[in-house]
Length: 496
Image (cartoon, rainbow, N blue to C red):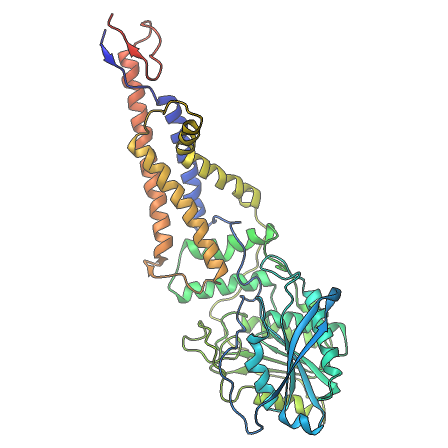
């Protein structure tokens, strides 16, 4: 009999581990394709109308009326929450003249009053007293919000502005941008305290459908095509919704618009890449018509983006630059309400390159729990050997035999592919898909690297599986049946 040290047998655990790796990799590669994605990994950054779309920190256009007079105010919103605001009043208000007032509501995101201060001061220069306030922190986050609660906050702000000496209490209205338009229209439908409604970039779709449409547009603009578009704009949005991590995802704004009786000025920029403006303008106009509102003005403004700001990238950027004539037409429309109501009129809606898509419920094999379990199995399968070895060392047990090189590479590459896919999708969600990075062959470089890692892991796992099978055959040939049991791992065979 052969003397010396017999190489420890790793065949049975290796075959099992390699099988698990192959199964996990095939699942990952399928998820990276058009039919699915690694979902449920994070929260949306623009849970509804893409967060931060309303930042207006840039300089305001100047006006002959002079600088507005700001006043700090505090008031009580829904559920007793104290809200802090600022009231920029026109210079003429110091002379005791009562004029129109406007409560301004920001887009999705934390919503500090600084976001809308420049826009509010511009309205004040045109003779409209405005109120901007810090959005509540209690009850509003990336994964939690209630438009009904925000609407109650807005109405509390209206009541405060109606009580101010600068304003005529019968001429105080609401202004909402993007998500703020959902809130403003809901508040106006609940109370006649708001005398009129102005919206910017209002969305007539549900937040989930709108967000999916915006993701597709931003990725398409960046030159991205293929699996990532479907992974982010379809499966990930639906999985976040199913997991309850996309707040107000299914909110339908149409019933609120049907109940709005106040005069309405709704505006969209021709370069609006976030509100699905062609569909939204049509939906909102039809809702107003069904509700019997004949005092609306729907305007399309050329050359400006979602929040009616200037743009240097066809509406896909977010510079804080107000046009020179910002708020002039809107303020004139508000002032004319004192002498009569407008008749219904609508500009042609801004055209869309692509239409939004309905988001159907997830099938069972893409459900949140199924994907979560599959992801955990992937990570367990890939990192199993390393974790087992670490536990053995912590317990002071003998170190197991080293892994074959191909199996080690499969474990490392597979773990990197899973974590890389989840992390990159989360990054895109948080940044509203605005920064996918350099694109090569229709794929962002990061996503391409993730897919290459997955393919490398699959190839390495296949090589490890073939090697394990050959080793098993070699050991069996050295120890044919009837010659005794195969040696245990690490056992030395004595001369016969």
